[in-house]
Image (cartoon, rainbow, N blue to C red):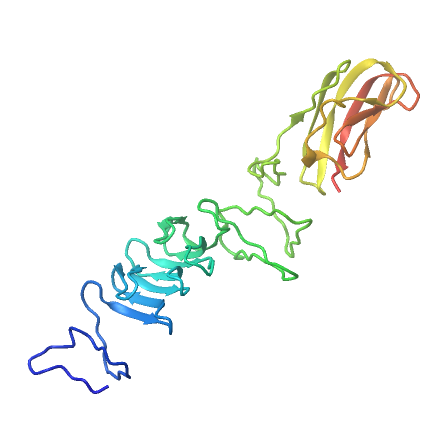
Length: 296
């Protein structure tokens, strides 16, 4: 390309229409709607580098201040924003269609910067997202790959991590529990707080209190209480009409420690979530339960 501006013309204000190679010492882009726009062979926008929010000249796609990558369907998949209001790096799931994917990664230099594309409030520094718009979550890896999360050996980790959807987790370092009221606590079924005691609804004929909760120890549940009934000598359901929740039901029927003194017996918990008094042929009027049972 050998085109040159005419006499008295400061630059190529109307641009070039002839394809060719441009070799220059400096390229300066100034003014509204200015920027660098790269298209593929199908004239689909693939990247844009702009100094202010604008639209590209061929497709009219919104290009946010900074450097953007597009998927060839008019959707942003990466944005390195240089906006004063939203500086940072943002990456989005690629649906390989013209539907904008959710935020999957963010790295921002100050707290709760709003992502320019999906309007997610991003906490400071790096964060992997689970495709939602509120709670960030460290994502797992498919197949046989191993996922890991590293925490600096110095300083304090002020957030929280939630592990779910796996049979076991491996920690290759010492697990230290702060000396506080919270300690190492099991989560409740909702997974949002330490579990609390749940009271068993007793069958007719039983009285007293029987309760249970997750312990966080070896995937187990703690059952505790004392209930009374007219004298029994055979196995008798304590809550046959009201089994405990599925999350607390063991994989196999399990005996639970109890006091087996005169007139008293222990119990077992069935896979259906039913506590069963087991007098073993000896007349009993009270069933005492105080022990752990495994879920697996």
